[in-house]
Image 1 (cartoon, rainbow, N blue to C red):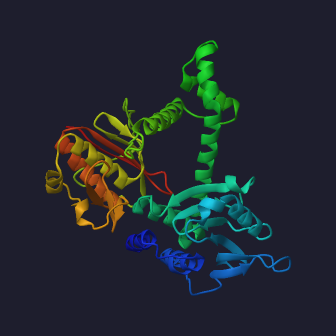
Image 2: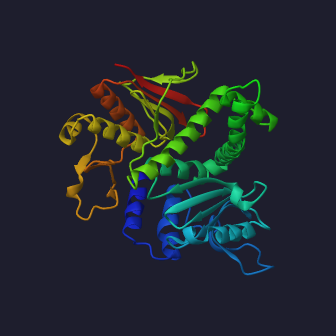
Image 3: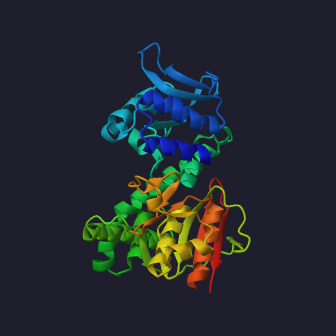
Length: 388
């Protein structure tokens, strides 16, 4: 899958896909084949399906079936860039497709942007969206993780895809309630007796709404809000400087005894993992993508005086000067992504390779590192930790 996504990404960058049919035949079907769908069997992968033949001539661009006559996924496929200009109308189309014969999931894509919906959730269709990712902007590992978790035929058959989608939706809904309560909590903590702290007030207000959260969850949420506010201010101050890593000095929370500690000399397989918290030195990074975290830490080392040639000498990373790539101007080229505020780029790595290089960087800088991770579709958690 990784090499397929890299090739598709390159074709997207070069503008190879010109219309809706290019996206369907040359991009979506290619990915679906990697996700265990038999694209040559119309009973399983059905193009131009009439969803209500007795009522109108409306057709779904692509419908996937695990069980006969019960659609698993509806795809609404658009030409490149069309989602940005017409999302509300596209969502109405999908809502109507699901009117009589509701699929479990619905997907909107123009090849680059992918929007996933749990069609059988109640309420407004736009609120059913549980995941959005971008084939050009997100890390290859994350894209592969999302595609495998939600659109792989086997994950749909065993029910894991729906469980994970519902978990994402619940988190989104809970996040929205917390955002709604945050302003009130801030005001209540300052002006109403007994003058509790903002996290305590947020916990109390959430309980009133029927959602229970811990003090730790409230603290993490408030840090996230503060990071967003700081980042927004920084963007205005920087007047266009694209490098705005979200970091803050932190007090390290304790590690639960249920979390497995991985040995830094033998980290093991990290496939299908996502970073939940990353500490490097005295900073916490609000980054969940493995390769993005490594690029930020490489920049941190570069900023402290470790030059390009030295980085290449001790890291197991393919680093190249941008001058090697003729016409390099977008920050992405043939699997390489620019390390912000430098004149070099890094080729993407697996999660295990990133973790190993993060440890090498920490040892070189003689600083502490802690990366907390979670495996998708399970409750399994682990931590990678090293101290000088």
